[in-house]
Image 1 (cartoon, rainbow over the protein chains, first blue to last red):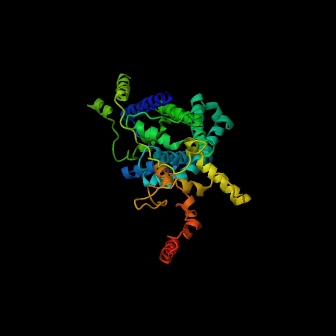
Image 2: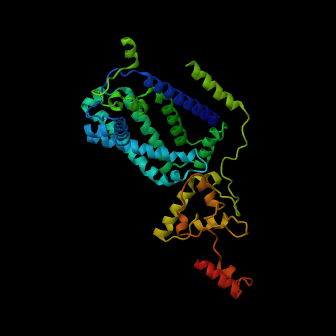
Image 3: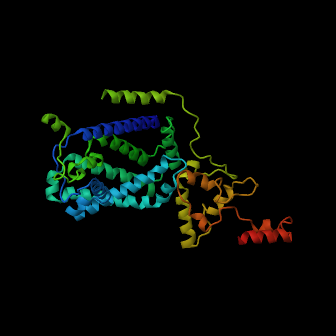
Length: 240
Length: 144
């Protein structure tokens, strides 16, 4: 019964996340950028922009330049989350890809980095007067949600283990439209329930900074306004 | 929103179709001895904790009269290969490997421990093995 409920929950959450994200990305892609506003010093070539964006995505360059300790917590969290997510591929692939097998132990340590980063970022929202003033409930809720997901996952790794073979059979089954028995294990049900909630609210939350980063005019524009006139298509219409 | 509802409806429709034959999980080999009093599910979830706990009992406290020894696991959960001999952890058929490969969990035990049942002293003293050639072969294998 609960297995079916969780299966339906994950199907719904997946559809909402994929469709919601696609709609949001379409909206971002269609939003006009009427002005040339790259933050200078900015690259003057397309290749330079790609490189700058890559540094932004991989190293969080802007954040590093503006605030070292926020960068440290943010980076700890994001890199930890990345490794933990990659580690979870073992539940969806059979046979497990070799590199997923290779990073399993790193993913375990990464969970500590992830939780430490989240704790630091959440402390920032309480301890820094200026940040506390501008923090909205959603800022706190997203941190609480991610922290709860991380801690419930770590509970299953370090304290109350679950039957992971059955968990994998459940998810392999979902990918083949077949509902198998999910272990009735509280930390697992909490973990999966929170992940489904995260997937559902992803397209309407601040987590949209993931696709949003690539559409930031101040980061994705070439600084060539002195060589080429910047003319948005809709503005060109007006000039006719 | 309408499109979204149609998609969800389509997916739920899929769920109504007959379930494919299951068998997504690993095929776990049958053991040779008595069933665990704690039950299979308990052992599936907790075997590593039991073995680690008993390892500490043995290594740190010197207690060898432990309830969950790796040796007993290996003896009872023996799987024979095509040649009728017990397979080692290098084989995909090995009891531990079947699930550990499925879940991508590395087994460190057998870097030191034997993954096959030990040949006991009594077995070595059996007349059919007490042949000089057999012993020589056994010793050679043991060296490798």
